[in-house]
Length: 127
Image 1: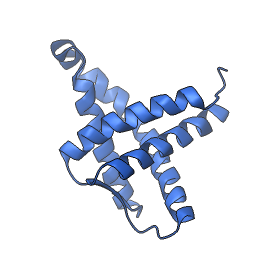
Image 2 (image 1 turned 90 degrees about the horizontal axis):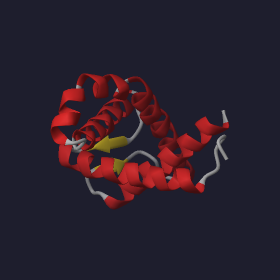
Image 3 (image 1 turned 90 degrees about the vertical axis):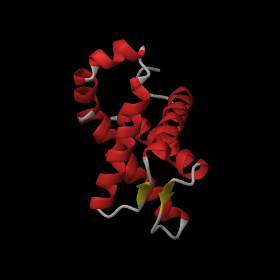
């Protein structure tokens, strides 16, 4: 359970960094800081669910492309997962939006790097 909370907080921080750094990724509808934090936590839950349920299937189906591109297809898959998270967030009324593929591609890199750094900083069950 502690590991789940740590991953959710790390994803929320990573998504916040992407919102802060890119014009193409926005967080709308949240007026106060508390609203923004809650929205980011909910979006992080959606992002975690997408990465848990959809990403392994996409990776399995695109395995030949992993070999062909020497793993660079991972950037595209991360961008697609961010776009899917944006679409789901819009359907459930969260104010998180990714405006296009290029924003998602750069945002996916930012989210990956920041989430990795947060996982190094925050303790989890393996510590």
